[in-house]
Length: 119
Image (cartoon, rainbow, N blue to C red; front, top):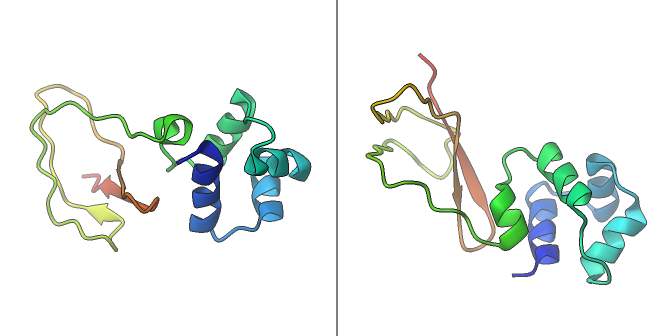
């Protein structure tokens, strides 16, 4: 999948037209048109604007098309469904780090966001 296809996936997931998407990320409509047509490659600034406007989009996926694998530390992710936005999972890594969110990307270009319950 090309980067312009991943941008289209983001647009589709937000149900945005090209004009709405350009306005939301703060770029000229012509710039977005050139990127979507493949005429221009998106600049770093362009990609940063997408990531800032859509914080649940994985930057690695946007740039490379691949989601980076996380460490295989013991993770117990339970009680998750594709329609839920929160989970009651517990992760004990033996350190003071806390999970802010978990993103699951599917091969069809969609994704789900899971946010652990804050106690």
